[in-house]
Length: 528
Image 1: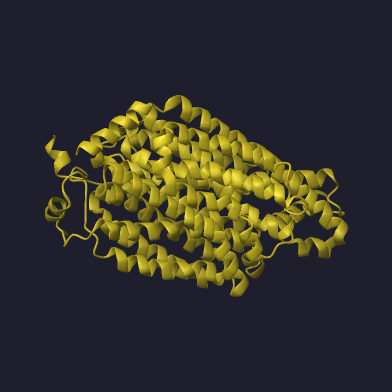
Image 2: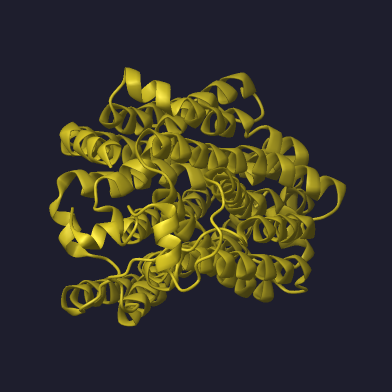
């Protein structure tokens, strides 16, 4: 066996700790798993919580639809943009150190967001919170890959996936309760408490590094961050500025330029944070793109369905969170049975079936609405959650199992970057598409008021954010009915687009992933 592998992630725990300057008394793998699992619960709450609180938050802070979207997009952009850098930093400075630092940053930013008096300060705090989340998720995945191997690693990542699923499952419901009992501020402040508990649990964890890592790719971080921010800006401003407007087209063009520069940088830099050579492996390419086909739809549904339920469905904040349970509970439960599922079905099949089932569910949702067909809506949401849950328990382990163990930090960074990029682009794209489709439908109906496109645009902003009170004040129940019909049309368009994305992902996974690559990786780990 090469000496570099012995000196890195595959060395026995005691050897690793002595070789690291910050070596400390080893703790059991259970504590490692508990700390990382709790962090995995904390992170998705910060994604799903604001979705439930958007209607109350936008009203309390007098925010427009675009500025409210940045409460979501600022977090997602930072989360995605710093994922690769966090993976490299974990290998360079130590996974435990980055895990603790990221958790502290995340908790402090949550405190600022929960006490902010303006929407601008909330947006800025959410960006910093996303940076901390990137460090936590990437270093946490690498710590698991470092601590466990073989069948134990599969079980650990199954629990990790279940923890993420639990956060996603209970996030909307708990956030709805917090908004109902307290206010939207509590949705952010609960993460301060969770962050403090994670810090206490994680402090004595053993340290690990990649001895071959030397520096962080700052030019890559800069170009990738700018590309993602401009892409999100284009989707957010498109509905109000016009998809052919200077701001929108300029944002998309700038995103393309910086993305091209990012590729050039990664090809030339000595220590790239995105190792393009790994893309020569079809299995790895398919696996790191697989989460995009899942989370593109999942994140958008979690964010925009609660305001839809509150407005068109007439549900309160607590009820709107509870209505998402058929979607989110399977994402928590199914990863717990990952080990049994893998013995019955191949990993490739599980990865492909997930987005395929999701695509079918999304098409079924075009026939439902939250007011007149809740039973059908719940059934479709349950089917969608089943498809997502099938993939969640296996995709993290698959991503780090097809690369050498000493590069687990980078592999985790690449995988999670594309996962969160899918969330970021999905939330931004769906927000823009929903506003545009609703606005066009209202304009086609005459908007219901004498103001043409301007009135339709303002009404679309209100109905998408669940603020039907403003619409009712402008024109009564007749105008409310027209606004709801326009929103339902917008959602039908969104469902079809998301179904196409999921189906394309299922086809790509099934045709590109090679079972022998995953089997060989598992065999190698068992033998060590």
